[in-house]
Length: 351
Image (cartoon, rainbow, N blue to C red; front, side, top):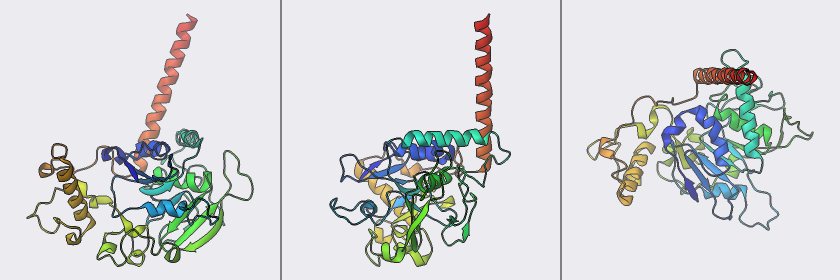
């Protein structure tokens, strides 16, 4: 696999992420970490991870599930070429997903984002239509579902107006080609039977549903029964044996280890020197950082003895309607200023 990195402080602003999250993936110039398969001269897939995601092992199997190793095989891939995961608060987690870029995707995404930003200026607070979201009204038999949650039909989930809403709209309604991993179930969504218009895509078709326990059991890159690994994973214990949930940790809220003070040998349980001795994903994160600093001689870059990234991120740590409002008003001011400058130019040219 190949990995491309950009400093994590850029990703704290979800309006930056909204514009760059999917667009940059198309050219593997990602904001945090984008893994690509080395099997093809021009990699097809992009596996994206936020800077607060920690993989525990090699994730090549995700590429292989979407693209079998034997190109002559007539068997269909087990996963579609786009994959998203549900979590407790959203049907599409913007911190870990698989995309397959195609010609024209970059331009389509630019237009979707521009249209959404223009619409926000004409809407009242909170500048987001929770009925049509990024451009689609969710009607039965279509539905939205978070991990462990019931079905619903509105754009009312965490980050629906930001990166996570764009990801859901892009993969399910625009591309209509996505496998949605929802704990113990995997839904495969494909194109609607009727042609879709260029402005309002028809609801996609649920082609099939697989048991995640059957499809994903044994796919994990961790050894079976890896001691304590389920405690490092992302969801409820009943999914600790399912890939890919058990194979990475998405740190949220106050659990982000890079916002802690660097643990020392006499600093208690947060310090560990081997994988088996780490009792949390955060401790493992610090152990790996120390190892990288020591092995690659990065002491001048990472001063772990004086590490301090605590406090509120300057651009915000999560998407809020308030930040959406500020962005809409800022764009409105820019549009007004541009119009005034254009009018001034016209008057000067007439004189």
